[in-house]
Length: 282
Image (cartoon, rainbow, N blue to C red; front, top):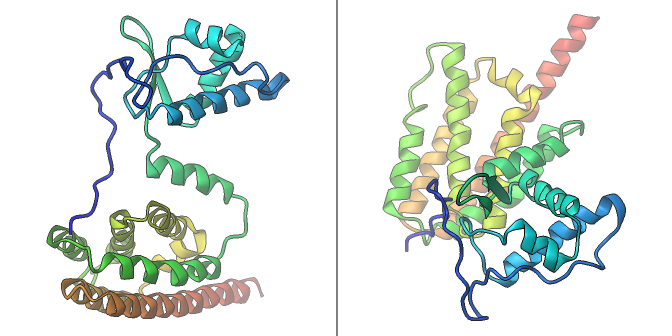
């Protein structure tokens, strides 16, 4: 059964949504926000009112918001507040503005990459460790592949095999080993995009991103580790076999073994690196 392909935002100039019956899209401006917030919080409150209105009227990426004067009139706010509210939404990636004829504020879809980048900033000064990341990967990725196995398509299996082709042969240099390790992680990022549970898929992909960005992981990838690569390839081959049989239980079991083995090896390498730094300092 084919998986659902995420909707992409069109790069063509969006057209203005036309008024329709009450159960469909409407370009009528949002209801008044006169009682929403005060002071510096007011633009945020107005932005939330507009977002609620977008949901209530089933608007989609590419649809245009009401003109500025309509928002000011219906929301009962000043021009400055209306503009600040739209700026808030633009910063959040929910709208983009265009000037000139046919311009205005248009709804956009926040990409997973943009959302992940913003969320990663939250952890920038946090003491995130390999153990933290694998604790969640062990819990989430087996669930992801168990749900995916009965529904995965031949095209998706072929794409996964294509990703694996980048690291099935032993690397000939440290730089190539690093590239192979990143490609191996990409295998898991691709899996996350296949999930029909958008929340599960997003967080599995986000954990892969954190792992790529973690400083200690970059140091691990800078050193030869053929066992890590070989075991990873073996587990991924087993996973694809389970997918081809559409065996959900086998897929879950393979992924759980894969994550636990990777956790053990990564923590072991992390400890070796830490010991090396201590020996250097002594």
